[in-house]
Length: 202
Image 1 (tube, one colour):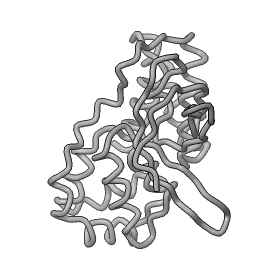
Image 2 (cartoon, rainbow, N blue to C red; image 1 turned 135 degrees about the vertical axis):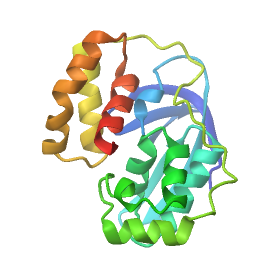
Image 3 (spheres, one colour; image 1 turned 120 degrees about the horizontal axis):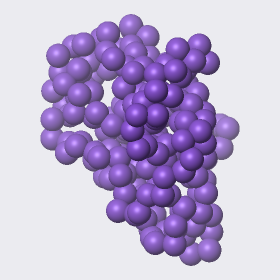
C-alpha cells in the first residue's frame, strides 16, 4: 500500500490530477484537483489505494490527517469513495467534525450521495472520534498559483462540482452567484470551487 507520492503534477482536470513519480504518471482522484498546479517543483501527496471488482483507484490528499478523515468516512456504512471525496471537497473540515459531534444531519445531507439515513449513520459511527485530527486545511500548496482567465476558471470549477456528484440543476442554481463572486474578487479555480461548495452546503 502507498503512503504518499513525491513527484511533479503534470495534469489537472476537474476530477483528478496526474502526478509523475520516477517517470511514471499516476492518475489520482482528489476532492479538489485545483489545489494543485502543473509545475516542475515536487509535491507531496498522501495516497489511499482502493481495490474493487472494477479495478484499482488511487485517491490523493493534502496531508495525512485529511487522508485519515477520508478513511474514517469510508468505514461508515453507505459511504463510498465518491461520497467521501465530495464531503472532503469542502475545506471546512473542522465544521464537518463539529456538525458530526452536534448531530447536525441537515448539514451532512447537503453533500451529494448522503441521504438522511447515511447522515445518521455518520453521526452514529464518528461522533466524538474525530477530534484528534488536525484538519485546519487551507487547501493551498506551497507552489505559486497562476490565476487563469476568469471564464476558464469558472468553467473548471463548475465541471469539478459536477464531477463531485452535484446535479446540473444544483450547479446551475449557484452559477450566477459564482459569476458575480468572480467579478468582484481576484480568484482562481480553487477559490471558485471553494465558494461553490460553501454555497451548496450552507
